Amino acid sequence: MDIIHAVGRRKTAVARVYLMKGEGNILVNGKDYREYFPQLHVQHNVTDPFAVVGIEPTFDVKVNVYGGGFKGQAEAIRLGISRALVKLNEEYRKPLKEKKFLTRDSRMVERKKYGRPKARKRFQFSKR
Image (cartoon, rainbow, N blue to C red; front, top):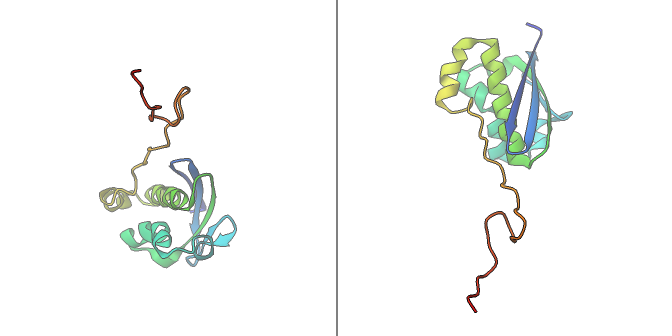
């Protein structure tokens, strides 16, 4: 096993994940993931796939992520790590699928339409 590459996306965030043998370091854009995501609930999004399959400290993960906000980036990383783990071992698919870690959440912001203040909101109607 050299390096396993996978891509995760969420809203406008795109994460390229590289999984390799190591001692459990997770680098996001060159920083430790705890430093990159200071919020605890967001840190758990990044490490949850390892906890589900039960192989926590055996792999190094290098992630390049861009676009979106911190929560969208964390969920994009979660999807990328999950896809990389399935490439590593097909038996991990069932527990990850049950937790919905392999589902691409495709909800994005709807574009603004012309003649309106927002995507769906309309200006106040006046009959007279």
